[in-house]
Image (cartoon, rainbow, N blue to C red; front, side, top):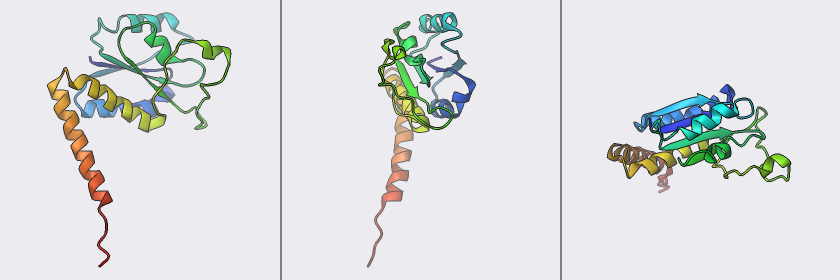
Length: 161
């Protein structure tokens, strides 16, 4: 296992599945777990503290609401943790810059929101793993080349002569 994907609830899978799909496409092994931080803090701490023993090199965690899942995990492991902010059920981002007591938790800033953030986290994780794993580097280069060609074909100017 190279990457751990952690969700606070099953409903977050709609966003985090983009991470899993791209990791699989790039040939990166992953595990996905649902661990509710406020209900299963012991399970969360055990997951994070034993991440290296399970072979995890990176953890990608989704976060909504007042529990800062990525920050809690990062405080319990030396494995790099990437945090994805997931929109709440009504599609709104939570305000992580407010002065509420819950914001005083030692946490890390999160990447982009939604499916784009989940995809970016997978690309970021692949980039971090690419230096150590030549197969992942090759898959990542192929993926980027394919997407660049798609982008180039969409951006070709029309000949108006």
